[in-house]
Length: 219
Image (cartoon, rainbow, N blue to C red):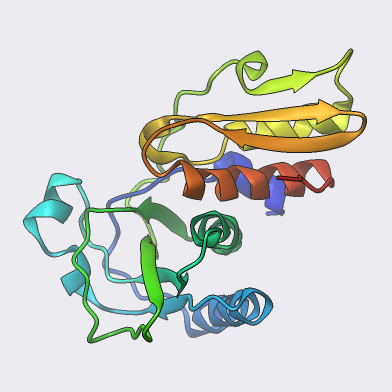
């Protein structure tokens, strides 16, 4: 599976099998986490075999079951922390998908368990990403028409359309898809709408667009 296939096949999964992840996959994922932290100064952490974070009424209300593994997406408090969390968190999500694993972004329906991860003063836990072998592969979310999330002078080039289509496949909070890509004079800009978790969403869709289009997005 390549990364474009991963974008198409990735769906949010909330129910997981009681199945251990192979050591080689854990090592590969840890290497990706290390790279993201090294390149960004973030403090993303991988937690293996901790059922407590999703053993609560809130998690059950969110229909989570069998979650034992997750990534803690955290970093120094900064204006762009949420967007960076979405961007690099989604990189990890798609790498996991290519390994045959399933994932789900989680904003609220988990219990913080500082016994298994650590934050230093000045850092913030933005969210977590559950991962493992899903009981299902998930289902596609509702997707807005392309025209609602893009703006272009004249006929849009194929690379721009490919990027927008990939962004529409990205997970967003409550499936809001509150973003707009603007192409003007060969430069791509990304604008967010108003709503819950839209800054994190912005990073996620930005990563999808850049991977699929091969072009950088300016903010």
